[in-house]
Length: 303
Ligand SMILES: [Cu+2]
Image: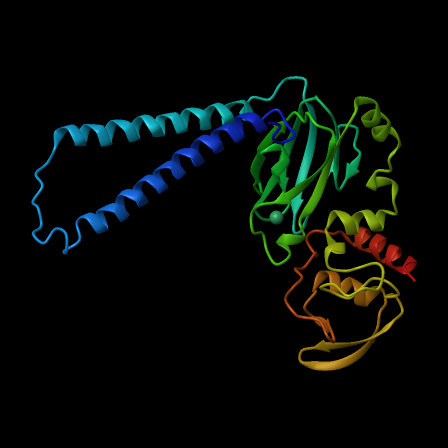
């Protein structure tokens, strides 16, 4: 039976089936014996309680058998896990970044993307980085999951063996929009991979302001098409008149450079009517003034 889409799938699934099998066997066995005892030794059938003295034979049996079983579970678990920590030397190395709330990837040639494309039957190593809090990088179809630790180093690798498109998820609750942390990995032939590498646009070919919005996951909360997500849309924002709440007082502002800059650096100073306070953190330390200028320049184009 074919399971999963990487060379790890077989080992991981085998250990899952063995552990689940043993657990189900004991769940059914223990429940059955328990129900039998309830009837067989009820007060009606067994009015006088029996005093049972110890039994060495039984003690040995229920010590030795479970010990052997947990050793079996450990063995298969270990055999499934061990190859995951030994990266082949010829693996393609890609930097993977997690941040609230998106993933991004940097290929060896500097190409930056928000989803992965990899060739089939080739080992791929991902260096896992976090730009803010703990995230967990999870590709269910490949049976791999590892934490992305801020200021820490971690990695995972896999060898996809079935072309297709698979989900990438964050498996560690990382804040309000954790469930928006979705990406995908597409497994293609060697030839398709090479042409994708050279032809598909990198995020770096875009307007630098848009790249910054993507890299900093701004677009998770601010749409570009006028739809309302968590924060106001960027569409038609520049030059617009907004009613904002400042220190509990409503006031009217015209969206200009100063207003956008302040909203990026002190997002909770002015809250646009109809939106919630406290959902955005300050980007004063993250974005330089030049970068903020690029973003504003890009927002101006969204009429
Ligand atoms: Cu996350």
